[in-house]
Image (cartoon, rainbow, N blue to C red; front, side, top):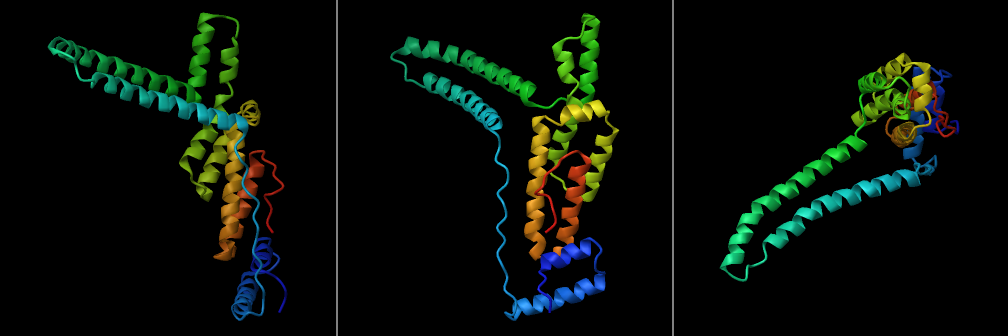
Length: 245
């Protein structure tokens, strides 16, 4: 009986060093030895995932604070309108002002939500060309805004992929084909972006999840890990932690 672990067997099979029959036979023998207490099983201490940067944490805290202020404003206005009037004339004036206060508060909430959506929602790839055309019609010289918007093609593609939360082989292939269809300039511009950093973190997190599932189905987990390694390399992500063990 060799001292190989289930992970090492799966690694050898994924690399083609052993065929399927030998892999299955060795796996059965190893599992039988583990259940019989002849082989010790060591716990695996996986490294923790990357924590969000201070800049991303600050953005999240600002968005949460803005939302809290927007929600708390109507409560204060409503509590003010619920104060009991001191006499009949005050009650009449309060009843007249209540619809106006409600309309004003609603307008403020709607405008605030529109501003939040405009600032934080990623623009589609097509909007870049439209904005650039409109700016060029107003002024002949290029502006800094037009230059900044040219980076949104690759970043929007990354944002759409992460929003779907699908790591199947079809999803990876679809993203990769669309990514390679972009110009080299667009791909290079998206590399240092925050969305690419989130893509890097998400790939590593998914890699750790597949590694944790290797004790249930090591063959399937090894193949998925290999797909994630190849996917990361194809889009220019280099991470020494993405290796088969």
